[in-house]
Image (cartoon, rainbow, N blue to C red; front, side, top):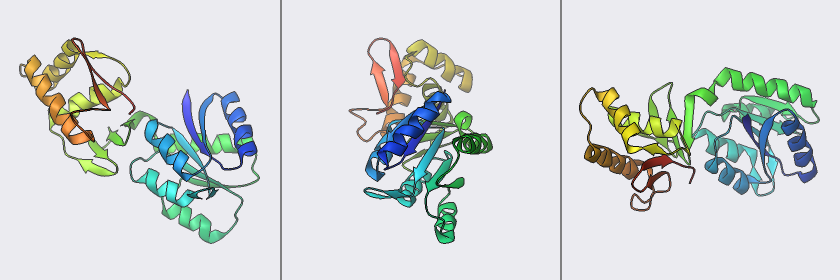
Length: 224
């Protein structure tokens, strides 16, 4: 099921859109303002963002800019404004489409599908918190800033992010690293690489929020 972040400060319209989107089999998270939207985006992975221009505690431009700093997820502006300058500003910030209110729900679905198909982010980007792994480019970024990883660090993070929220045993991870390096990988080597990754992607490597240890078994990547 595809996942949508709906940012709409009109509660009734937001509830109606949520009901419609879920009837079309889109899991939908509704945020009322800029603060809620950015918090929701940091907690989960989305296939599309529907973004109202006027918000209670900010505006859609700021939300779009913050999202673009860390992800290429499709962003579609929903707005009552027909101002050409607003439309141009939205596209310059990286929006994928712009739909004026009132709009037809079926048209919205069609344009969402087009945006998702064009970007292909659901198969290329893997994300936990503010850490994004872009498989198409082979890069990892944190809060929009690229992180430089060795080949084995990247491989280990890719396996953990691909299996997000799933426990990976130490044996499974060692096998993956061994296959990638064609050299013997010991349990101590795995420990060293987990430590290095935490130093690069965690706020506090001593209290990791993304790469969790399951004592005596292995590790898993989770949403912080």
